[in-house]
Length: 315
Length: 262
Image (cartoon, rainbow over all chains, first blue to last red; front, top):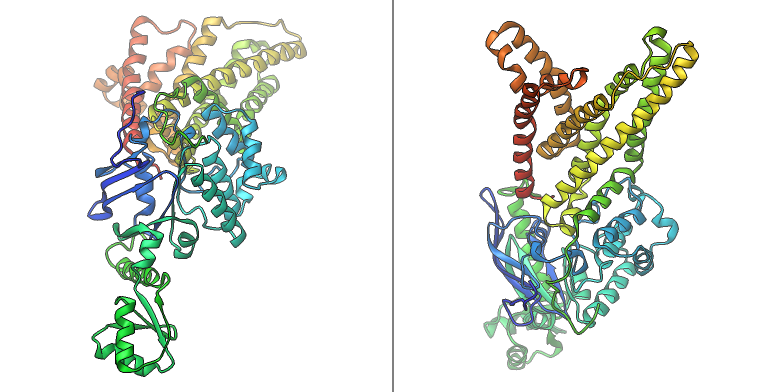
């Protein structure tokens, strides 16, 4: 204790290395490696049942890993003293005693961490739960209110790392906007955020770095800019069939996307093909996230197909 | 959060056990069901006391009668309180938060034992106090002399027996981790098992000889007798306690440490 923690990667606050978790023959998490750095919001994106929650539960020490490691701040979660004051965790906003009031839930959390009860009111203010709402029992809370309560509990200890599983689930658009500013500000102050979502849009709005997971495996990871860049090219012409022919002639595989086509080929190549064929283009630009979206939809479709077979019980 | 120190403070103080006990005690009272379960100790003691005053022949009044009557509901209530203190973490899924804030699960279990036993002892004292008032009031109504026919030692033995019952409930909570299952388990242990053991003892000579050593309920009967357990009987409580309390508790804690908290 007391010595400088060693990090798997310079500056990384969360380091997951070759993490695997199997349930019988089912690999819920399959050789997953990634890092989260301070000052950034890392989005953990994947369809339901992809292994996001299991990965986060291993991080928090609730689920033992089959192999591999998940280190938080360079150590196992259980080796962090008074972890609530250093790592804020929200794994399931609904996992609360239905008979406790929102205020009582926060009071117990503050007591456990050894914080003054004034923190409870500060957090209620921060997540915009009114005093009268805080006096109601959690049983009567909407999912959005439970999420706010869970975020308040995660933040009450003033942690340096936040691990949030589907925190935007159940929040209305205004709530999602609020959370985005909250997490952005938190990251700007040097905090590390890992949040998961099964909705691409949420992750696109909130995260700086994105890790995409499907069927327990990481299928893509990088900064949002990188992932969007690798999404390929979007091209559109007045004469759709002429453009289709031009692309086919040039040997460029493209798929219809909206009123145009999206393709993996670089913009220059697409432009040349159109020029050779004499097709006037209306639009030629990097596909904005469409590639990521397509990849994600593909992933979701695959998983759903699989669901009916091997992992039906998990769904 | 200070922006300059992004790393974790691994030399920060850990959460002391005393604080966890305080939190666990609070968790036993801070829901409506928890509150009424606690209140039911006093209510049950009151009802038992009133029952004694109404139905016991006047010349039998004495503190011992009240203590015995009060012991009956306590033997049911205290184990249930202990069971729910443990199983709530699983059936209400609060364990997700509890074991994230306190990853050392043995600490949480230890704090829960301390909290449950404290509540059990305090509950017994409250119940005895109600019984004492009942003894005074009942004897006065009946116009008989107030008799304090129970020694402090007797009271301590009754408290011990109830704490042992509470610990069996706690053990079942840790082992089964499901409220309904553990409560059913307790009734099987306290109501069904003595019947089976009694039948075995009545029909099998060999079993009759070893019964005090392996039947925890049976071994505890001397705790309710004035003469109290002899040295051998204390040993029998210890040996049967290892079988019915210590070993299953150890298995339960082992399982809790390895289980996935969902």
